[in-house]
Length: 402
Ligand SMILES: Cc1cc2nc3c(=O)[nH]c(=O)nc-3n(C[C@H](O)[C@H](O)[C@H](O)COP(=O)(O)OP(=O)(O)OC[C@H]3O[C@@H](n4cnc5c(N)ncnc54)[C@H](O)[C@@H]3O)c2cc1C
Image (cartoon, rainbow, N blue to C red; front, side):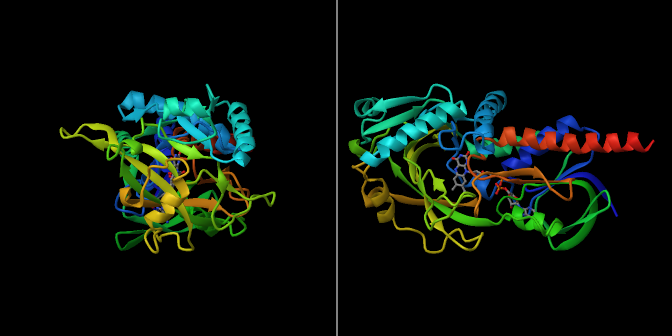
């Protein structure tokens, strides 16, 4: 049976970024990334808002807060180095009700505690200086928020990986992973043919399916992913003057997740909810530019099936009802349907899973919901450090046995 040193399951931004860090650190190891779909990044990584978050929403001390701030810096460096389109837009988080005003202070403090740079509070009048058509009572401005062209980001990582000795297989679905002494046996279906190989280390970056894969190794793995669909629409900001936006993501205050979901303390888990996001487009010459269209979403719909991207999509009326308080000029007929994405939400837990398995220590599991796009380089780096630990322990054991 063939033997691989490190197998990475999943070709989203988490798998790709960890593969890049690992190939750089371990050029002599055989590193393989397997992806079940025809293209890399087809699931969460290619179906999101593309926002480079600042860390206003996440609990101080959480993995999300820590890696968001570091990831924001690292993804910006990556975009500069490899010419990936990005824009420093800043972001407004807007209070639209009296109740929201107290919450706004809470999120302002959070952003400051999390180390988001340059955060400040805005008055009603100052909101208008940033976005004249946005209505609100007060806001928090986070200048380090921006947008990144996700498709180019993924393509760039794939190309960089292509310049290394790493093996990348698409159309390759992991069917089973079984622990054995000193590693795992991995069973894959590659375009209809089933193969097995040994892998000393497995990095599980399988997104929505990562909980099921880790449970194949360790049935005691406790976390369960509940999918939450995020639906997008768009409108042309130049269609009427009251729709014009200068070019900044605009959010309401975080709200409880639709359908209800609790964290580990029994408190409702929150989400940033439906928002406005500038996006990229191609101009007539094929150059990537900021689009005339503004994305509206993700409008969140609880679902039971992790692959249900389309059934019972919310009508434009639901989007307008949700957001008219922020942009009163928005009408149902302005909205055009766009893509959807499905987010990994962990029932009863409000952070990422980014750890070596408690029992099978050569397995690294990464269950990374938002801000996982922002944080991808920082998460990739962390995964490579967890792999460093595995090799360091192996060396220690070998020298102790001598
Ligand atoms: C609607 C939406 C909006 C979001 N907005 C933002 C945002 O603005 N900013 C931000 O920072 N984050 C955002 N996120 C979160 C971000 O997209 C994710 O955190 C990030 O993409 C997770 O990447 P990943 O590689 O871990 O997972 P994924 O991108 O889901 O990749 C996992 C990969 O594993 C593959 N896979 C699964 N099972 C198997 C198997 N058995 N065998 C082989 N391959 C397998 C899948 O096909 C997939 O390609 C958003 C997410 C969604 C859905």
